[in-house]
Image 1 (cartoon, rainbow, N blue to C red):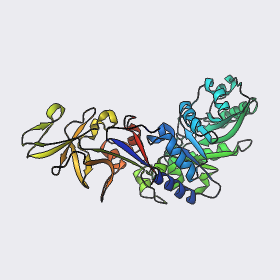
Image 2: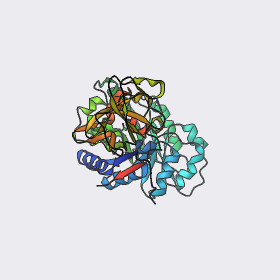
Image 3: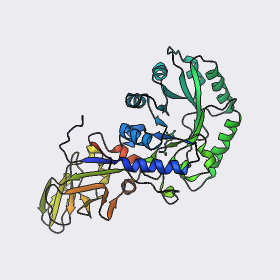
Length: 371
Ligand SMILES: *Cc1c(COP(=O)(O)O)cnc(C)c1O
């Protein structure tokens, strides 16, 4: 059942764009390299189930998430596909993971020693190598071998994969990246047996680096959603990607603001000439954070700035002329020749594009476009 939404504010998720991005990736990869669709954090705010469905249809053969809860949510909808949890899982989740065929990341032999598996099905794990990210993973060959043998001797545990993560793959300077690759090669050369899959490439590595780093699978996150991992990568993309997220609403009020009159909390904006002001029903509780004050939106194919302070549920825009109630306002996306990109928002609030769809809160319904 689809829920009826009465407020006109909504995020539109273009599933065709996501499929196209995955298909383009598939054509770009060496044959037989698997695509792991990274759908953590509710698919970077796009909606985990629909995005996963689109990615699988376009050729992804595995899903990756950050937490046990995210994995269980996907498992309800996808009974068969491999799901990998990239982050830490508590010991208490291990038996559930085995039963649900959810693959866990392991990086500590103590964690393995504490396991008390009571499932009839094996628990599949991927071993995480820390080659320089300094986050999760074994940091030395000895630690790796110790963890490896602990996994080998634990009944019901199966080493299915090995992986690492790069800290600087999206940057022009390759010196730190090269160090990580060297360390990775040392680790891999000392692995007693190669597991089913080795995967090391995030979007930036996949798009920018030598195709030997594709190994058996790539973990495709941000660029599946049509965004470049950094402005530098944006200038070097090996194939086109299309942004899949847009955000729109409608004018709910239009009024004249006379010269000298003000708008919003703190009366921080004062008209220096008579203008039309429109109110739109989206505010910081929707993720339109106050730092976005002054950001332009699109109306009738033209740019119009947000004026005054953004409220919790609403904000005001300076209109180029009088418009009717119900006129469409695009906060992220295209109108005719004009476009406000996620990258533009990211620059405005001095962050990375990854953060933007993630901060659009659950109050904003995700509506799926399938063409
Ligand atoms: C989030 C994440 C990815 C995806 O990275 P993108 O830059 O979005 O492609 C890959 N691997 C790990 C371990 C991650 O945490």
